[in-house]
View 1 (spheres, rainbow, N blue to C red):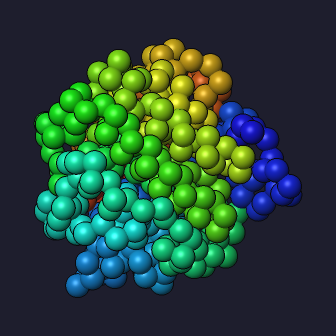
View 2 (view 1 turned 180 degrees about the horizontal axis):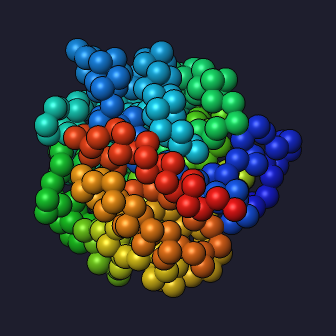
Length: 355
């Protein structure tokens, strides 16, 4: 089923005719919808206040905090969709992987996966493992009403890279060494992660998420041939696993200009584009039948209102011929961003694109 069809066996929900979901389905919209990646925004003072003294992973597992943090930017910025507050390593933590998110570093894995025996760490994920997700989404959808909630997960390649490297990396030497040197082990690792991430998305959709996004944050480190051979099959498996739900599926990576056609080929309904490729050129690379999401450079928000509006017009003009466009930054909101700049940006896009 495509995102243009109503979910099988369901009546359209309160969110079905929202500008965000209509844009994902490439239908006419009253204005270009806007949301921001990393929208809980580390930039919001109210976010920092509610998170004070609470470790990142703990905050992701407390439904009351997840609900409050997810709603904060919706209240403040009037965005057209909420993004579920979580982290891409949450499903790994939920199945027992010994990892932590260290401030200033990122996710650190105690026992990296380097051998076939290490795959035993990756058991199946069950809804019971993430019952707090189901609870939080129930609370959120009740509060959000007609505003869609976007669920998400990390893509198999990005999660595999964290697991093999043991943490963030600039070179991905261990992950690429496995990919090139033991392709069968690599394929088995990604296939197992595809099952885990698909299960995590299913939990979110069944709890009430209106769309889902697969973050392949590190995919830009790959050549197209390597992506096609060693990564695309696992991402495609994730998208196939949730296709029958009929919710829009978004695919996003950073530095992926050379991979845009392949990312669309993996099965997404919407392809996210970072700021390096204009949207009209991205549409040519992706091909017909897909909406696009993006793609203002996040650093533009530090340049003042006039510059933000100028660069935003460039993005909107580049998107003018698209079948469907969801306005977003080309990556996540940076922590030191002025929240008021985001609020003004949403209002500007809504006003400029009002039909």
